[in-house]
Structures are given as structure tokens and as C-alpha cells.
Image (cartoon, rainbow, N blue to C red; front, side, top):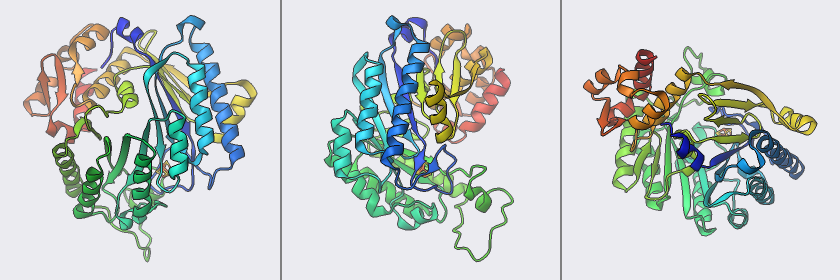
Length: 410
Ligand code: SF4
């Protein structure tokens, strides 16, 4: 979904901050993060100083003094942001708000937290610093599943983190759950989901485990993996079971009152992620930190750039020259169009807005993407007013829908 020029000017920007440190590496994860044990205060301070120096430089390069946009959302993700001491997070939040002083009243400020790295006092300190949303990587409330995923936290840690976040005053709480994990069976998944929905966080994200190249799981579970014998490696659930877990999650969360607003995301009224919704609807964002990506929708068909990935090389680049950009690219019309289609269709309640699409690309989706008719006939997409939406069945086959739409359309 793209937006008209005047609407684009009215919208603010989001800031994504990447914290590339984790206590230890989970064997399935390919995120940009390195093992930092208990991150030292000195390293945390050095990294935050670099983040703020980078943001000052990016804002000076990207905007004129009177054209600095409104700051709509801040999302501090990782990695494990909660390895930073709460004081460093407070310094970071205050620094970002100082560099982008046109702050919206309702600025959503999210911090991703891992159970086992947060406790009451640090959560209260973050809340006082203006953080108003915590996203907790619970993944499962079954200790066997957590062990199979190689997570260092337990069910008890996860429950404690959820309780502590609520006690610290975080009304806007998000919980991540995973399905398709080694040794996970339907009953275990539904039990975790049931406990989470009974706790009633405002937002729940449900992700299917994917086996990514260059992870330890790829060696264990990837195509053609030679499984070492004698190791207690739990099998992955089958494809049908994994699909059924997703379908049951959609049912359970819908009947508990959660709107299924994006393929993996569910929210109670008023609790959708404003930051991610902004990214999915084509809003500009600045990404700071190691490996972070940024996007500006104009001029032309848009532009993106990204930073050096290693924490040390990132900090050295900033300390030496104030910039850590690794590369940038101008989007072509085809790339901008593909991105609009994929992001728009992911937004399940609103879909791809035909009028906004027309305003940006000069033609309606039905003409730009002739595959829509066949997909509609197969019940994978539907037209609702001017919008094109994935159907419930289409959500299950979303990758196929995107591939067919874009292969035919471009
Ligand atoms: S804690 Fe999160 S980011 Fe860190 S290694 Fe594990 S899954 Fe990846």
C-alpha cells in the first residue's frame, strides 16, 4: 500500500534501533547478533553513543533544518535490547527524542525483551524513560520445547517476565510465540497459546519456525542434513501438523477477541503495532545500529540503505567518520510495485488499496497484476470495494500468491 504525496508529508517517520547483542546464540536464529554474555556497561555505553552520533548524522544529511519530520514511533529491536542496562535504554530514548524533537504525543516506543534479561526494577526504569510497549520473546511455555529450540530461558522465566512487565505499568504488551519447533506437538502449542491468551496481552505474534541457511539448525534439520547419531535431536513436526498449528492459532486468537491484522500478528482493539504497521504501509523509517536498514519513499520510486553488520566494525565506522552505511539502492518502479503488493496483501484487514496503488503507479492492481483474476477464482484473494485482500485460504498460501501475482504482473 502506497500513499499519496500530501498524505506522505503528513505522516511522520519511524526509527528502528538495532541492538546486535545476545547472551548466547539460539541455534535457529539468523538475525544480526553476536554472543555478548552479560554485556559490559562500557560496551553498552559505547554502542549507545554511536547510535546517537549516527542518528544525528543521518538526520542532518537527510533533512533540511525546517524539514525534520515528526517522530511517530521508536522500535528498539535485536538481538536482545534488554541486555543493555535500563539507564542506557533511557539515554537512547531521550537522545532519539532530542534529535527528532517533533515527537507525536502518542509516540509508540517499543523495546524487545527476552525473558531472563528483564526484572521489575529494569522494567520500571524503562517505563519511566517513556518506553510504553514491551515485546517479550516467550516462544513457548513448555520447557521441553524451549530446550529443543536452544533457548536459555524457561517457562518460569517467561511467566515472570510477563507478570513483571504488567506490574511495571506496561499496558501495551506483546508476546511472541513460535510453532513448528523441534519436538513440539499440537497440545503443547495450544497449551502455551491458551495460557498466553488467558494473560491477555494486547498483542500476540505467532511465527512458524523456518530453517535458515548458516544456522546450526540447518545442519541438523536442513535439506539433506546428516543428523549426527546419538544426539537427543527432537524431530520437527510434519508440514500438515505445522499448518494445523497456524490454523488453530488463528481460531483461538480470533475467538479470544484478537484481530488477525497481519499474517503473523494479532491484536486486541487499539493494540496493533504502530511501528510495524507504518513499515508495512510504506511510511519512511530510519534504521540505526549495526546492519540496520532504512527506507525513504521519495524521491522517485524510493530508496533504501543499510549499515555494516558487525557491531565492532559499525562502532569503528561511526567513531571514525560518523557514518556506517554499507550500501544503498534506488528502487525501480517494478521493485516499488512488488513491495507495495507484498506489504499491502500482508495487511489482512485492509489489503492492497486500489486507489492508493493507482495514485502511485498510474494503473489499478487488476491491470498491473493480471494474475488477480485467476487467484480470485481459486479463492486465494478477494476484492472488497477497491481493495484486494488475501482470503483465509490465501493467507496459508501467501508465498505462492505473491510469487504468482508478481511473476505475471511484472
Ligand atoms: S535471543 Fe533472539 S536474536 Fe538472540 S539469538 Fe536468540 S532468537 Fe536470535
